[in-house]
Picture 1 (cartoon, rainbow, N blue to C red):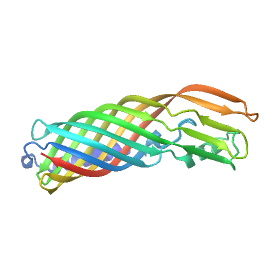
Picture 2 (spheres, rainbow, N blue to C red; picture 1 turned 90 degrees about the vertical axis):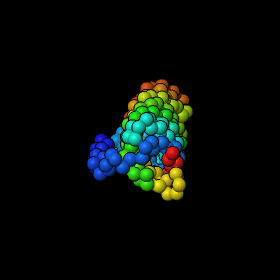
Picture 3 (cartoon, one colour; picture 1 turned 60 degrees about the vertical axis):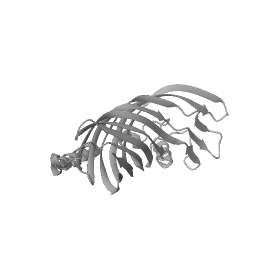
Picture 4 (cartoon, one colour; picture 1 turned 30 degrees about the horizontal axis):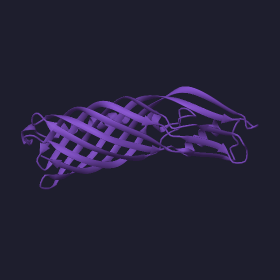
Amino acid sequence: MKSTSKLLAISLFTIISFPLFAQVSHPHYISVNIGTNIPLEEYSEVSDIELGSADQGITYSFEAGMYLSRVFGLGFNLGVFENPLSESDMRDFIIDGGNSTFNSDNLNVSSSNWVNGYFMIGPLLSFGKEKFIVDFKLLGGVMNTSKPNMNLDNSSTIDSFTQSREVSSTALAVNYGIHFRIKLIGKLGLRINAEGFQSAQEFETKVKEFDNNGVESQATKNIEKEIMALNLGAGLAFTF
């Protein structure tokens, strides 16, 4: 929530700083972007042994804005952000939790990445001159999240925990943020992005376990994870 407050404060300051009479007539744009993704709140924490936490990752997206007036437009955002699972946090979570199945001296953790793909649509507000345009957005849409496949095992014993497969979930999501477009040459410009994402995902996952005698057992459970993240990045924008 602190990150949301900071974005709102920046947005308010920028609106006050840019007079409306300086705007271009219709600041339509398309852009390609890349940057870093910073997990927030529950997404950055180990909430369940079958989920784990997310480390800082990468984001890439394609965006477009079509304007109905000098100020108001409709925005589209299609992209992905993915994060490696924090294996050290998972290891600490298991050891600190006193899980007797694992020997802390021989516990190994391996996993794939969290992958979040999304499509968003919603209103845009833009202010500024031809050489410098500020865009504000509040979009809604869908997000598909694939949670990582994870393996926990003791190298010296047969004891192990294995999440049998990578599963995904699709849910509604919100995307909000602020972007700066700085003219470089002609209609091509640099675009600097700061945006947040929020979605609540529910997964049905299968867990495979082995006891000390090598006997296998499986269980299916529903688990939830709130995906909250901040994207910071840059890209190239074509304004027309």
